[in-house]
Image 1: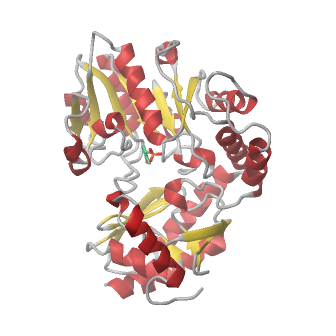
Image 2: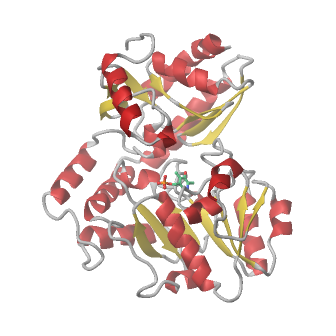
Length: 401
Ligand SMILES: *Cc1c(COP(=O)(O)O)cnc(C)c1O
């Protein structure tokens, strides 16, 4: 692990080319990655990092996992694309596997990513409630994607404002507040859309029983429940589906991020009446459920199961939590999370500085908010690497205090 001042020569060169040609929507990333293996990545200057953010909770098996490499290589050499004019074995097999994660089963639509999974979910709501109800209730601080529909239910005013008018009407209520939701959901509510734990909001874990209460409120009002498990699902929180693990069966569940192990894919799982809402001609995608992405997702599901990764994620998450508990530092005011999905809450808006200090020390973490560091490493992270970060954390906190 080397530490230098800021990016190296090759990184700076790529940053200059980026600045000249890319749109400004991301700013200029401070790091340029060239390759990865397991939970390790290397930048274009050859510096090694422990990857504790995993491409924003995406690289669930880490980088270049043999199961993903083998599945993707075999599939791309066999049939890379079919469109929705033909079906294929990996797509049907993936839908079967995902359906089996939901009590009573589900029908599945395969999309390209999280936003397009949520678009399909919102179209299911619209069509099911057509002529009856249009209002959607969502949560402040929630995140559902950047397309217009997904953005319309995203609870960050600054992200929405430049693009209004958006589809609606949408009412936003305080997250994790059962009474606020109860007051907002009426006989005009078509659906409630929320995350079981808010990811982009800063790994905000609601009190036990929140999601079950949301389900009851929806049932009482005749509203649908859409649970966005794009970030929480497929092992991140130590469960296949956090909603189902909490005894809640939503009308619609959306998935993406970790599902493809680094390949782009999303999925919509619809139960009960919601499963039959979309009929021929109602929705589609040329690339959704691409065979290569489906092969990768099947490899992810197989590997999580075969290697007992759900138990591993829960145990390592607990170990991390205990190690953070043991840190006596006034800057670290709290930590929270489930499984390998953690937030470190800081007493001052120095998360970007801590992210930079961590990077200099060889750890990639994410300042998800000014006072919050998010950790979402590969699910295959080992205890020695987890401990290495815990051991370095007091020094990193000291450096930015
Ligand atoms: C990341 C995310 C999305 C959007 O997914 P994209 O693949 O970036 O479109 C939607 N919902 C949640 C909860 C997310 O974390």
